[in-house]
Image (cartoon, rainbow, N blue to C red; front, side):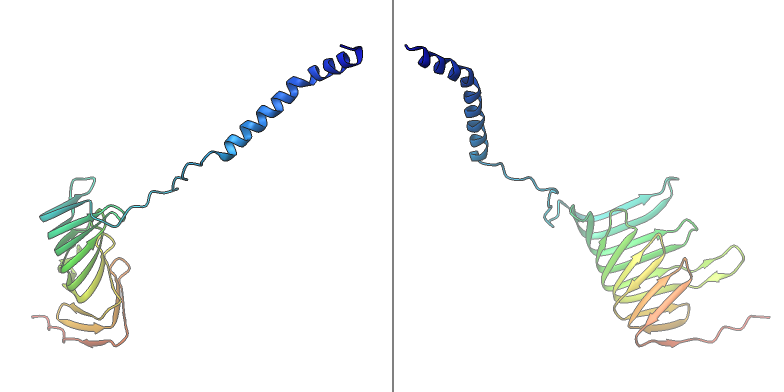
Length: 207
């Protein structure tokens, strides 16, 4: 082998490892690029709106930290939906007791309640009733009843709302309206649309 050829071979030998590393890197890059990609995982698992359990002739009670009963839900048939954590109830009946002892009851052909029964939507012949109560100063809060095809009740906040026609009975007085928003905590009643009212004369005090 001539000296010129030997020098060329020696020079090539110096760069051969670098060339091999480059070829290996390109091969690895090509394999990664050509390999099939795994399907991307959803950021959030999508739950179907289907019941995960059902109840029949049941009653669900919720108690406060002091052990006192806060609410009770009863129904003929109930279906729990995990995606919304709601309970759909046929022939629903409800009773709620406020921290001050005010008792509110409700019933309807169908109801939709959240997990703790603090928010209930009532459909079909819906009735929500707050019992009369005597206050510490001696005043009496008259019985209050709401009737309609749809009522949305927040039991702990003592609110009742409806976007459909309602009838309100307060003691012996009677009101009807197309829409209603009642907030007992704020002592506010909003009746909207066609509003009609019948006020009975106050019963005179006995001597």
